[in-house]
Image (tube, rainbow over all chains, first blue to last red; front, side):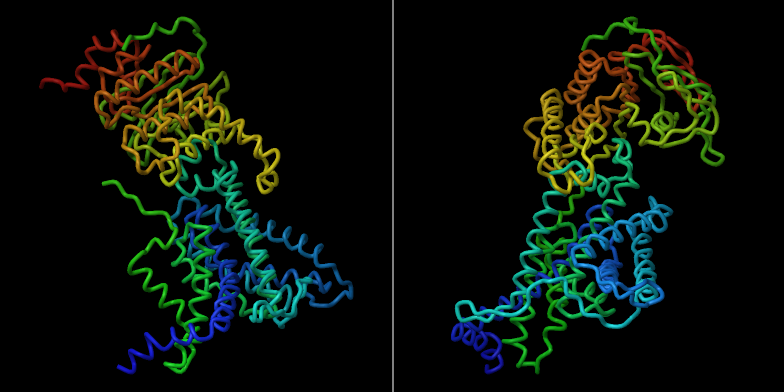
Length: 322
Length: 265
């Protein structure tokens, strides 16, 4: 009886008694959720447009962040010497965006083109390979030390209705919102977005209406690269640019399962649910099992979803005519 | 259904296949087949199962590359063509087993047919507002005309995966028409349809031919339908051309009767 009471009654009583604290926890969860969403978005983009799960997305974010820091500090790639020149953040971001587009072109040429019409699983394997190569290249070019990244996003905290909030988190939420809106319009309303969805659906039919596969892939990987750049900037500013950044990809997995692999809004909502869920669980239920719920809560949630709603909250229903 | 007049209004040849041979390993799909398609006519390719009809269409459209022979399209001779180039030079097609983008709406499917007519670059599309949006509205107008023409207004927003088979075939025709093709290749446009749907489809094919002057090359199993709507018919059997001529000539041809009904031994 006491166990039941501790699990099902006490936490809710705590929440009701200190609503300000509860909301602070929720907002903390929402803001870390936004960060998960940013990474998950990159996955959704490539999955939507090529039905391939891109294992390299996390490394893409790392690579973007490394390149950005390197350029800002005026580092010479490979030789790792400082030129002493510092490049302003906005210029460095534009140059890095260019690098990500070049990377997309290289990926299409070297990895994707030889694998046209292969099973998605083979493409998936090739993205695992790509992840390792990119990580190595990032190391060779920019070195493996942890670097601070400051692109000028305001830091600090402020009080609002008795809750303590981070300025940085608000910025992250705003940037994510703008990006999602832009991507949704790009995918749903423009001819290129439609061509992307068409390619994902049926290669052959897409060819017959004259959609050039090659340039479509370059577009997709460029967009995914740009999203990775944004994710890299946000994560890098928050916790420094370091190689463990590529592991954030793992946190994106449960987000995708929750939101659905094919849904841009799903990636956002999924990220928020995971973020809030793990924070609330940690604070209110954590003490029951001596804490550390935060590390596995997301995966348990994903498992439950796989059991009851495998296509996720917003994923495309799988329609099969027999 | 009224049989259309033989294509004498314009005797220009738009497509000519010369001595086409195609083999997959040791299997000969097409052996030394030659025929032509005149501008503005409805040309049918018929034959029993496995005669090489779809292979022939795939050669024209660039999915397959024949080992021998050449194809002259609009006077330009070519040995190989990519599907993308075929689409860019005015060849549109439909598929035997409906190849639509199943997760997308009818409207979006047909809009993809406008792909080559749409002039938006990547950066305009990223911005969306401005030129890209204007271009979308212009393309949408044409697509609405196709939708009205095919009488599928009611299913405009429906995901095509949910539509009955007959309607899917009609949407696929719409996507091909949206490209404003000069040559329209139809792979069994009436396969798996009931009588009413077949009659509708015949009407659309004849209307496309009449109103837009689109040249049509179609593959069909249903002999009755073919004889009613085509100007000229070529008959394949086991990859070999066994007859070529007007529907009446073909119907009277002994080889054709044998191929379809079997020969008495």
